[in-house]
Image (cartoon, rainbow, N blue to C red; front, top):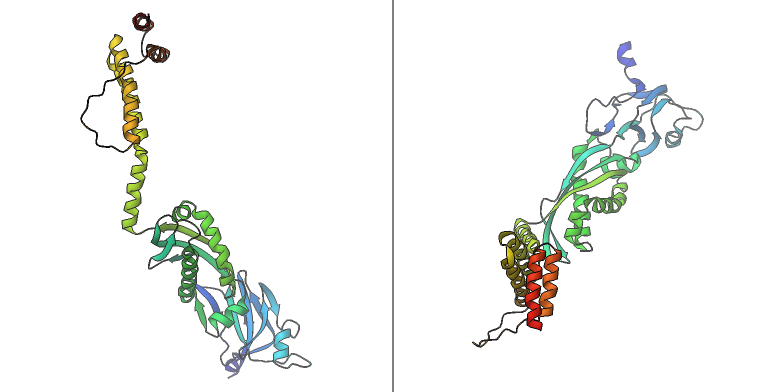
Length: 332
């Protein structure tokens, strides 16, 4: 009988956190009372909270405490201990894990419709991770966990995901940042979202330690369109591409031909460049069938071109001198 009676009093209060994923743990006090001088041990990454009949009392950070009127000033007031600590007494004791809950996942189950500055109305998906910890046990007790025996990470998961998705949808819905800028600078976007979510987490007594946007994606059909557009951009402007092809033919002719033949090809290529540029930069128009006489090119212009070919090593000095003599005869 003496052993049974002794078990009705509590002299050691602690929590060993043997299970992962528990945010709140209620110390078992059913049919038991706390006696004077009881030892309260709050380990690192823990906070203890005394609650009397639903009223939040004293909060204890990590440390070892001997319970008395000095260590329980709020509870002393709640229990109307006018002069001295009355023992034993009834009170609920809650422990909170203040460890950082890392690698929490969030993601948009359904695409979010946003108005993009470049693509118009598009649907986006976003995914990432975040971490948090309990910062204000009183707020967490009053708004989230209440008087439950245990409250776990998984129970809070849905609420936090909804909070994040709502904030993400609001941010993207404003259309302030184009999709390509968001996708190309996810670090900056992550920082912006964390700043906007800090206050919302704090309302629950939580501190948002980190927030990462790992990917922002488009629907498959729009992504295929962007891939095609990117491929087209590699070719570039058609006129520039035509000029490149014509200019490249000069080098090819010089490598595959010799003597004055290469000179003729090079000079002809100069004419082709001009014609190609004109055709690529202007829309084609139907012309009446007529023979247009090609004006003979100015010998001085040809000499300048020959000088350019000589300086680039496309023709030899002998070839240049021979062609130069021929053109000088035309001038005279």
